[in-house]
Length: 302
Image (cartoon, rainbow, N blue to C red; front, side):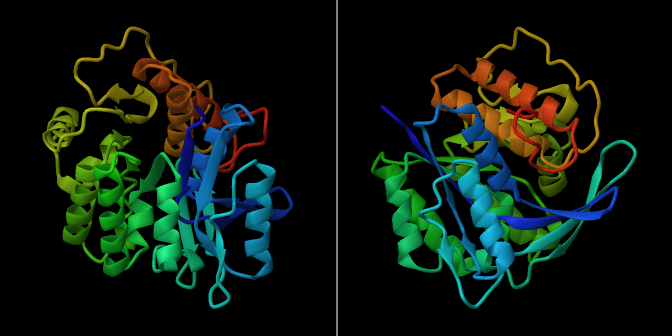
């Protein structure tokens, strides 16, 4: 049976310096993951992206990109009141990135503010959200989203995938972020957190403390991302037998975690065991960080 997976969040214009000035691309954490997931799946597998965009030319460019990547865009609403968000990225000599954002008028901030978008969740088997997705929503939108997810999980028709992706500047306060993230983790079926984000947000002393807290919230499936060190399973009963090879070169780490998510989830949808999902995610991220930009050309990151 074909499994339907929906990624929800914000796609933005991505400005990146090149040899002649600046180039415009399109990216966003869950959007990146959706693209990489779709590239690794057979053509018949349905990967949807759920967001809002504007009616401006840049929004049309984002829609065109999503369609060119084979994503189902039927759940994307066009909002005449707002535009597409924009960010610029700069990388240092080690490939570490820094961002500047223009997203206050992003249409994606209105996501899940009407019943149509909430009802769309009943048409998918897997829903992938991130901390960034939650951070750009109002408390009312978050509450409505969490309520709908809880209803569908109770009915046994939906499984939630969650990546913390904590960005402090997007949140009202650290305390609100802690509360909302904890609520999300309690609803999560497949967890894809990053150890650095969890330690930064919750003040955990080390990796073991992160895993203990997440497992204490009932999480038993997924992987804890540890950058170049490779992931570890959330489930303590799963053993890792093969080492994770380091990247041959690091040019840009912008979508390292997002590409890992896409690779992991593509393998999961195809029925692979957790250790194989982790390896596919790691190997994809290893390739992606060797190229500039969040979404690398096809054939580079598949």
